[in-house]
Image 1 (cartoon, rainbow, N blue to C red):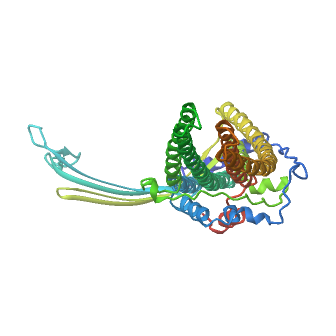
Image 2: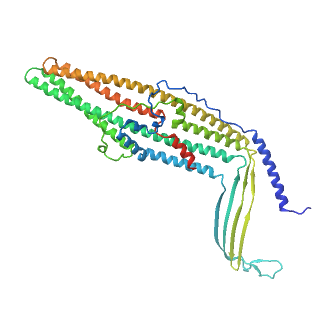
Image 3: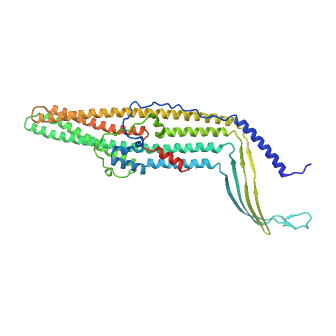
Length: 499
């Protein structure tokens, strides 16, 4: 019989493992090469309701400055800095960074420093009190297990998977794409917060204007009631006229109370958006004034692919799915692990002490054999996820174009409507003033004055509502065009930090 040698046995095992791994890799190569299909993202060359503003596209980054409204700028900056929504989005982004680091760290050497210590007491229950006899020695001479003993051990075992087929690159591709998607979600949340803040401010200002109009209507009703009562006292008007004016006056007062409550609620909502939700509503004065919305920069539909955070997020999800597909393919390939380790041990017993130190170096090869049906099912599932990511990207692009086109069309309509209502409000105001003068001169009856006043009040309310709607629509346009964040800064952050 040939003498046993460790080297010859190890070499035979190693050659067997390598041959098995090579065969498995060759078989696995037949299942690779899948990639997601190219998305269909064809877009028109221009918007049908394109903007003609000479502003540069970069103006979209901080679109709220285009309004020339210091209060709006101040509130948006407060919201981006202190709003719970902004802080929650930032915390989720930090979570995504940690998940990315954890996904890549598993390809580095893994290991734990393990230590143990023990104390043991043993009592000899034999009648003779003897220990363990050793053949060839007189009786009673040997190792006695009775008494106390202590033991300590310190081990450091390491496992390191050798990346022979590109698993780390595939995992990095998915992890980086997931982090990019989280960053776009973060930027989208901040852009939405800026839009919500501007919309809430414009809504509050619209309510303040309506409240001023309602208070003016109440003042007019009180003045009419005073005049009618005087005419009733001198017999120039019937008591029923006074009753009708009192009804109008009560309705005007009720409208004032309703608008006061709505304005208070709008102020509270705005305080919550900017992170000042516990402050009293009086701490946020709202001016009863609205301006014309600024024209959005002239943009092209293709720019939505880079400007819209939701489109960029969908693109990152597609990249992550491609990395996941590659990872699923690589599961068919074998895994080779290096398993080095070192350790120390110490054991003590009465009259006996032993110290040991060791090191080891081993390798392990795992070849998927019986689990190939499971891996094929996982690969099919990942292929389906990749197709879903492609469809999701196509859908995001189409939704982005549709939303941008729709808001541009509606903004143009809002501007035309506001201009028409402004002309109508001016004519209604002139008609009301003339009716009031004729009534005072006894040339018109009260019904004519009330009708003229009601017509003017409706025109004023419609005009203020149209102006607020145009402002809010302009906010929607800026958001639909991908405003509220800087794509260039995000690109710099993702490539420059190395996180």
